[in-house]
Image 1 (cartoon, rainbow, N blue to C red):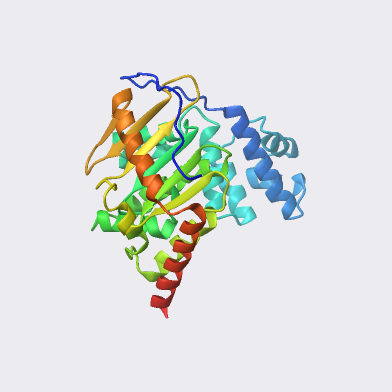
Image 2 (cartoon, rainbow, N blue to C red):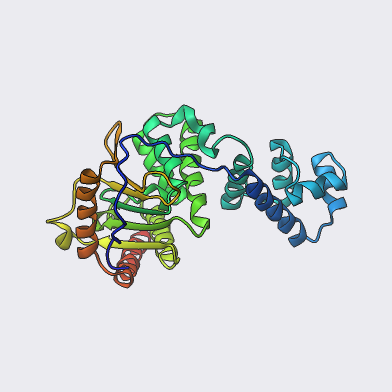
Length: 305
């Protein structure tokens, strides 16, 4: 994919009123399938784990079929019993939230500014996401260690529980990448690969993660080099979202220090689309970007020795 695709004629929409179907039944089925797989992988029968949720075999069976609403305590006890942690634990927590009427990120409202909550909600409805970042790896593509280093640097002296909550929020946003959509095109300024966020070890892990997911069909990571991007790269990040759910067809999100601007008027969107097209034109190819990532990994790997 060598350039940002041109969408159809944008629909003027000065006011955004996106309605997202929570798909609670589908989330319950997906959660049940995951729980069944975890049990079967450990060679356990329904009767072997029913006591973990203080219920009967039939209760456990209904939970795995997605026929009964999951209780937080039951799911947490099952995760401990199965020894689940890390990324899979976060995925399961996200599915539990999706089985309810609330959005998964509503549990983080006390640490999330309103403009970011709006973006997270819109990301979940998007068919395609195009973003340009000039200072840090985009939030959707950050590793946990990298995200923690950024949050800690931005909030010196903040309590550990607040930092932990913000990091969990960033990781929760990435659950959408496990689905066929949205398609993500990430244009990264070359300086991001040289900025030692968290130190060599954290950067090596982050860059290796980018290189790995760059092979995913729905993720296209492109590096904008110093010299090619000098004349066209803006001094701020841009996120361009496309939708196919009957609402506004697209919008642009531009984040500032303490707020953000949402643009929906066709003329405004055209201006930012032109910027993204120019960035995509001068960016390294997909294969070339992977080679640049590999070189950056080697560079930080050498710093560790």
